[in-house]
Structures are given as structure tokens and as C-alpha cells.
Image (cartoon, rainbow, N blue to C red; front, side):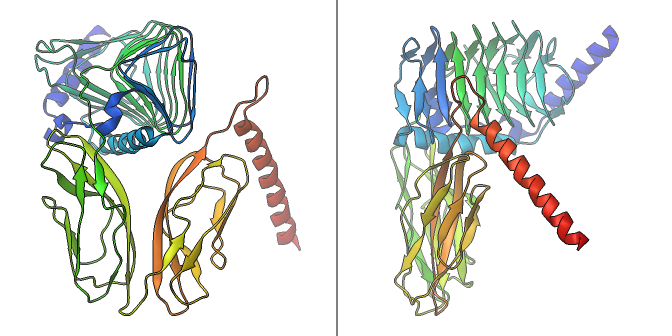
Length: 448
């Protein structure tokens, strides 16, 4: 058994040594680097917790337990512009790690007792740490370790992660991209930034030399120390203008995006979606040029990266019409937030063209449980999931001319009633009953 174990470590180390260069690329958190703790729905603390760096939440707004918790070298940001930008940057970093190729598949292997060299380690489902995990930086102060889990990350009580042979650096870059939720067991000593899609729980006495960053769910703390290792403070980088003009088929298009707040020079890239057909973005100047060839609504994100690797992004929508179409404007400019399992109603209207208008989803998607009425523009229903959702809605007038607007829609998580079950559970039971009733109805109809 011992011989097999040594062989496994040798294979892991050799595979990591042969890792592709992308495994050692820098991972930037953008303005999320300034946060020790960042939640999507809530941040809750019990006991004498110390957090180095900002504590924030967005799109939720509740931060509780400070005091007795203490924030050192930062401030509390409750769904303000700083927290919102940090969540946007966290999403970008999470997606960047998620698309980084694996060097070693550790699915089914407990991390306890392993010694790993720099590389990208993947678990198709959950990852478990029981005992000690050693990360050998091989004398490289810039060594990078990425861990990607398909679902949960869990550590047993008194587990630990340590870095050795790190070339004199006080810490190395260690990132844990978690496909659902992360839980650090009691007394765990942990290293690395946790980027979780759902929630993060630090149980009593667990300490981390790294950030706790949750995209959609809660961060729960209990007498912990959260330190940010290797802090590289990123400013808020703003991409301008706030919106881009629409265009027409056959008419030359020219518009330049710029960036501010960071260190020049900036580079620009399309980080999601695509430009209208035949338009190009100049990565050095931010110029969008070309002559559109296809009618439609195009939604995309432009990311500006400054000279230090910090970045900021903005979501844009451009509608390309046939020549002679007026500018069709959608209102409101933003959508109010909703809450999971609470009915939601909001109407989109259009102006500038020839009534009547029809409405459609041109990009992204509404949260599950909501729908758009194409004739009235009414968004209604009961949200079944929480999080931040990007959706582009297009209006088409009677002459076939179009306009669109990109929206960011926040659905807050359920609130757990004191002494009772969570609203999520209640909603799930209601949904189960409704689905069962629908199934009976369909069966009855089929039997007729």
C-alpha cells in the first residue's frame, strides 16, 4: 500500500511539472482582491472574528455580527457600488479559473496526506480534505495552485493546508474554485482564496490565509481569522461610455470605449457574448469599427485590463436595424430586485417607434419561474432561484424596427424564519405538490 501511495504522488508531481503554460497564468480577482469576505445573499458572523480587508455583500444587503466581529484595513459594503463591482469581478475570475485546463484529475481522492506541486487539480464532483495537505512551491515565489471542484469542498475538523519551499515568499497563489458550497471544519487551518458559486461556511475556530468569496449565497463566520495573503489592491476600473449607440445595416459604425480608475495603458477584450456581425474591437485603442451586415440585437461584455492586471467590465447591447429605423428606447433603465419564492411583477415599455410593440428575450435569460409576455412586456411569476441574472430584452415595433436594453436582475435568497424551516424548503414542498398535481392532470387527459 505504501508503494502505491508513493507512486501516486510521483505521477501527480510529474504531471504538474508538465502542466501547460496556462496553468501558471496570473489569476486576477479585480476589485474583489480588496475583500476578505464577500457574499451574494448575506454575511453572518458569530463570535470574535477578525477579517482583514473589506467585508461586503451584493445583491443581498444584510451584514450582521460586526461587532463582535472586527474588520481590519477595510470597511463594510452593503450592496453599494463597490460591492456590486467586486461581485462582477468575482464572476469573471471564477469563470476564468473554471475554463483553465486540468493537469491532474483527483476525483475520488482525499487531499489529506498528499504533497502537490504547482498545477491545476480537478474534482468532477466533491473534494474532501481530512488531515494535512502540503503544497510544494518548488522554490518558486510565484508558484500557482488551482483547485477546481464540480460541487462541494469540505474539510474535516483540524485539517490543514500548508505551503513549503516557496522561495522566500510569505505566501503563494492558491485558488479554490468551488462548484457549489465550501465548508471548513472546526479548527481547520486553510490556505487559498475560496471562490464558491453558492455559499461558504467557516465553522468555529477555522482560520484561512485567503479570501472567502461567495457569488450567490451566504458567507457564515464563527470566531475565525480571515487573512488576505499577498494583497494586491485593485482600484475600481470603469469602462465608458455607459451605453453604445445602435447601428444600421450597410452604415459604417465607429465608437470607442475607454477606461479610467487604473494604471494606463489599458487593453480591451470581449469577455462574453459577441459584437454585431462585421464589427471588430481594437484591443489596444478600444475602438469598435466596421460596417454591420446583419440585423439583430447583440449583447456582449467589454473588459478593460490595466497595466497592473486589474480589470473592470461593462455589459453592452447594440441593435442593428434596417436603414431608416428610429431609435427605440426601452424603459425602465433598471429592474428592481426580487426575492426567491415571492411573486414578481414588472412591465417593460417601449417608445420611439410605431406601436404596437412585441417583446422578446434577445440574450441571457430570466430567472427560473419568471416569464416575459411578448404582447405586453410584462415580466411576472415567482422566482425559483436566487442570484444575479443578465437578460437582454428586445422590442420590435409595427414596422419591424428594433431596440433593446441589457438588464442585470437580482433575486435575493430566502430568509430563514427563526425557529422554522427555510422558505426554500417550503417553496420546494409547494413546487413538488404543484408538479404532482400537474402530472395527474396530464395523465387524466391522456386517458380520455
